[in-house]
Image 1 (cartoon, rainbow, N blue to C red):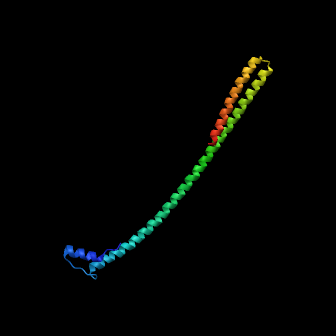
Image 2: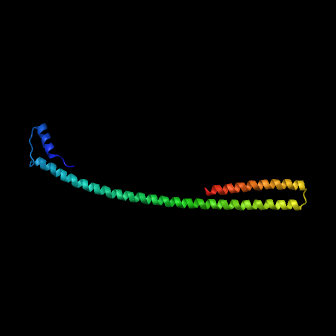
Image 3: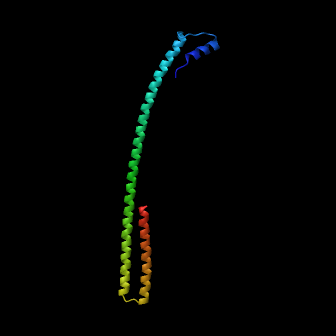
Length: 143
């Protein structure tokens, strides 16, 4: 921003009752200071731009690293949940097989029809609940 020399000359004349001209050494000094100021301002702006580029690059690198870390953590979580799901599925199969074996043994042991019917109804209800819970668990895993 350049100073208005005419305004500067007027203000000095009003305040100090001193008349300056364009070739006065004080005006030359003001011009010299403006040139030096412009030079240093340009250097400062260039250095700030360079620093902004470095900061932006560092931020982009940090964001990229954070995304990679997040992806790795997500994959670890998915693997853990799959292992838990597989374990629960195997446990469900084992319980189902035990229930089926129990029903076959109860029927083949000649238990009364009435008692066998109650046991079958009870086991069917239990298996229905287990089936519902397993499906609910699978549904929640997809979310």
